[in-house]
Image (cartoon, rainbow, N blue to C red; front, side, top):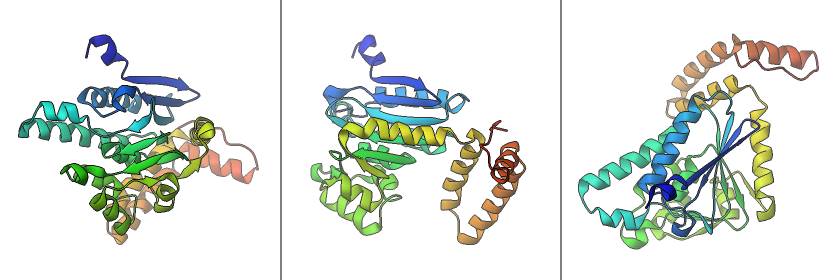
Length: 263
């Protein structure tokens, strides 16, 4: 791939505190090549330190949302070292989404399979068009979706995710919502507007408080119950000392809209 084409594989557009990252390898069904993952990683690293960005939307161009890893690229480097580097890169990317201070919303217009399904599951929220489909089909080609399983199994119930992993079957958007993989299913023509409305609602909240809450959510999920309560009690006390908590409580009692300082 030449440098110009490589530069175009990920698009970014910012508006009203929302950064939209659009996968742009439509001919390859937005497969996660090492180049596309690197481009996503670079943008997420920049966004993490960008106080103007309050919400991130991950979208895609073309006939698919994301077809998973680029199997042609994978087959082109058939060594253990290359495979380990690939999956380490992908795991780092997924962890970066989870650890990003800003909430991340997947805007899924079409099929998301394998690592593409993993990407949707990793995002904090997901809005899907009625035409969207989801699968972890690695078993069909002799490659169990072990890394996608990490994110998907943290969204779906055990039996639903095991059926997806063991059969490779596709599920539709309605089933994905019922199982917990996506938050909302909307008509295709409404997908962009519905996703932006959700993003803007979140963006209107205190950036500081949303960041504290997102971090606490993921940390407490991995703790024993008593440890989770101890940790989140400390987070709540810390939150209560922030200017935005004081402002929010005062605004509620005074029946007015809060003016966030993000401090």
